[in-house]
Each structure stands twice: as C-alpha cells, then as structure tokens.
Amino acid sequence: MFDFKGKVALVTGGARGQGAVEVRRLAEAGAAVMIADVLEEEGLALADALTKSGLQARFQRLDVTDPSAWQAAIATTESWHGRLDVLVNNAGIVRRRSILEMSVEDWDLTLAINLKGVFLGQKFVAPLMAKSGGGSIVNIASNSAFSAHQDPAYTASKWGMRGLTRAAASEFAALNIRVNAVCPGLVVTDLNRGAPHLAPMIAATPSGRAVEADEVANLVMFLASNLAQSITGEDIVIDGGFVALSAYRSVQGAGAAPAM
View 1 (cartoon, rainbow, N blue to C red):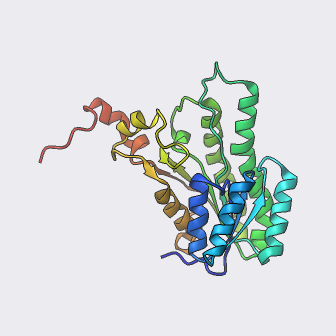
View 2: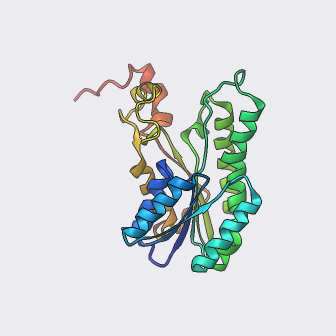
View 3: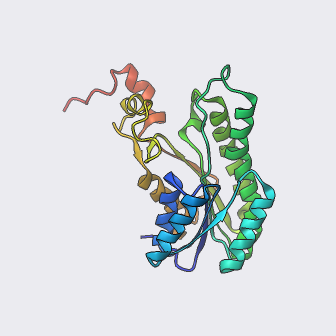
C-alpha cells in the first residue's frame, strides 16, 4: 500500500519504542531511513539489523534540543542520499509530575525536547526537503493536546505542538511541504508494558484496549505518503475514542452495550 522507494526519511527518537516501529515500517516500504537519537547503542543495533535484512538504514546521534546537532544530521543525510522527503518528529519525554511537584528543570527539559526539538527539526529540515521537491513532516503529539492531562509540561508541549504544526503547514505550503500531527492515546510498547497507569486508562477507553504502535505507524505512513497529498495542517487523534467519547460514556454507565 505504501511505496517509499527512492525516498529518504529521518525519524527522531527512532532507536526504540514507537520510533523504532516507524523506522522499520518506512524501511520496509523502501525508504532509506536515518535513525536519529541520543541512544547510540540501540540506534546502531537497529540500523545494523535493518541493513543485514537488506534494508537501508543509518544511525545518526541527534540531541533534538541542539541546533548544531540538527545541522550535522541534515548534512549527513544529504551526503548519504542527496535528499530528504520525510521527517517524523517522534522524540519526546514525559515526567508525570503535577504542577506543585514539578521542578523548573523538569519543565524546561520537557519543553526543550518535546517542543523546541520539533521547531528545530522543522526549521533545519525544510530547506533540504524543499530542494528535494517537497515532502511531509509528521509531528508525534498526543491526545493530551486535547485534554487536561495531569502532567503540565507534557500537556503544554503537546498543545504547543498542535499550534506549531499549523504554523509550519501554512509557512511551508509554498515549498510543497505538508505538516501534520498524529495524536496518539495510550500506546503500548516494550517500554511501558505492565505500567500501573495502563489498566485504568484502558478501562476508560471506548475501544476497550490500548493503541498498538503499529497502528500509530500506519497513520504516520499514510500522512507521509503520496496518498495524503491534500492533507496538511491537521492534528489527527488515534486513541480508541478516549478523548471524543469517554466523558459521556462514564455518565451513561461506562459504555454499556446498546440494546439490540
């Protein structure tokens, strides 16, 4: 369904978790994928595994908060394949602390990685992407960008990402660059399987389960592909109905099955 042959993609936070799934899917669809992360051991191992499978992948260390690191990553990508067609701004952190509990340092770090990193990625990627004929930027936000998540820094960063996505989509339209945000709900990966917050969140989700990383990757692939050429400036929620449906379901008795 997705054909990325001849395309080049860069995925931040691509060494593990959701990012690694996106990397693998893009590579399997024919893209040459730059795995950008601070996790060198895991990133190199993933690149090596994909290369041994006959796919195109390379690791580049990238601290998304560092402008010079972004410039180096873009230069390496251009020297590798001469172009860039897809950027997935996937890198992010969460601290799970309330306003009263959160330190200023945790606030600054979360906003730096989750929001400043996306700004820098869009800023430094756009010239090469435009020179390549255009492309697609997919920012990984969260359904917390539509609700009052009890994590102020994470929530603020994801709300901010929605605005940054729209600003970039407007500015880059003339460059034939589309910019969209994917807003997942609870995603289960090897990093959080068994965490205590999973069960109550799943119980409140109308679909009755968490979102799988492959499902998020499907949406990322669609938005990055030519199938989505008329979609830009959008923030698309993928959370099993958590944001849209949970409140009234709880009032109506936690989603009792309708009478047939």
